[in-house]
Length: 462
Length: 174
Image (cartoon, rainbow over all chains, first blue to last red; front, top):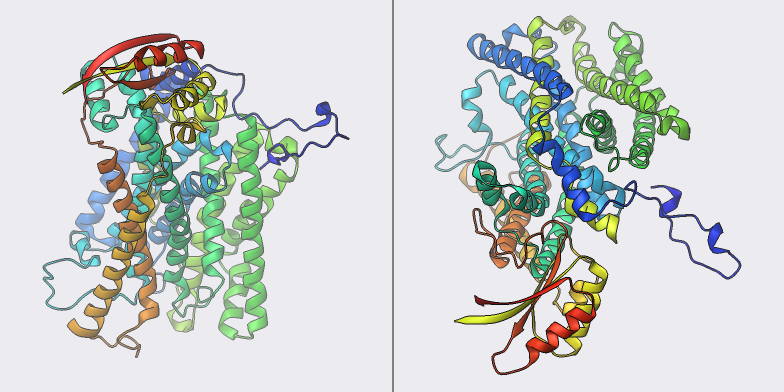
């Protein structure tokens, strides 16, 4: 990503001292053993006060989620603020938001692997974990939105088909979504687990005995670092990356067709797939940044997650944030240029209607915030990065809210217009799902290696 | 049947690489090399053939694709033709997303499964480490030592010349 990665050809005219030094992705030159101990340390030491405070808050929010969802199942989705005009609101906003968060993980692990970006090695493992947990959070929402979640298996075609010969409608983007997200979850899980096997073996060999050794022995599948296995392993990693790359692009494209194939003004637009993918990567990097800024300090991993990594991520955020801003502008232009009265009305309503504050908040967070990253000092400043990453998450949540709720609340028939106001259950479930996400992530950094040791070893000693 | 092996351990990948290359030139049969991370150039030095696992991916992916296409066609055209907004029964283009997803799903799972089978890895398998620390910071070369030859001495000498930290002769079942 940085100038340091550009290969330089030496010519006699250039003195060696004038050459740009390659960017170092690991600070100092830790020995192989040091890398193992540093990365294993968060799992082997007792967690500090910071971890317990975060875990306490997250698990309280998770308990709140469990209570709210139980009540939801008992009472039905009438407890939400949904109505006839706005049939999708917080639930589907949360769904799209969390699916988007997941995208950065696959981008970092798969796409950057294919592009041979060495800086991914410090952050890929935690970003992949984030993907898995985010997709789990996302999957919750279509499920609890069903009204009869106990019939949720109806969304899959299954044998024997108890619905007679009636099958799911394969022409519907909602069914494509079921396949896209299940595939995405499965392949991400396989990719994550495969990447972890050598590290699980390292932990197995470090464990002195007992339950830890037993569990790591099961998970590490007898890995012993044989070069014949490594050779196959690297090929398989490349193949999985090559499969996951179009997959990650397809997932949010398919999510966007849930909207784009409908006739609702503001939804019915061909720009949606690339626009959604850019937004997804953008929000995902925002979340990766939030998580890593916290964990690098609390888990003492500054040596491995360096300012160079943070800067590289800030550059991706600047790029994808600008793509998102460009998409916002294109939407307005097309609404005007199309001459379609419904489209025009939708966008005027978006910018001046009752939800205009959501729109301006979204523009402020998503378009203006990342522009600070044109400055190198901002890309390397922890407070700026942290505040920006939070604002991006807020902005991207509001983007989905604006698309969904503003699209639905005033469309073709004025007599069918309405407003959506969230109830305590809408907000409670929104807070709760963050509890689910952070609880899983905090448990992950305690139980599994959050940095890929073997990849760091390869990068630092090659 | 028990076989004899010579195990040499190294602290650095550089000497390991040159030792492997020299051993191979000298005609010593290398059983395997162990490393905490994939060392670049080791495949060529050992003469390992490029894995054919991508063919499994292709086959598994094609299976997924064929299944997805056939299944959607069967349900939408034969089993229960349904008029959805006047779309044709065989809406091939609308079947593309699921065909793609199943290609990737079956292709990916098939590749991972084939890798585990080929590398003989399975949950709970007891690890066979040539020396402790090959998953941490030690590199190791394991060579075959035929009974009626002095390959053992040759291997020992080459590994020592390249800076092996420790060399040990062992017996084990192949």
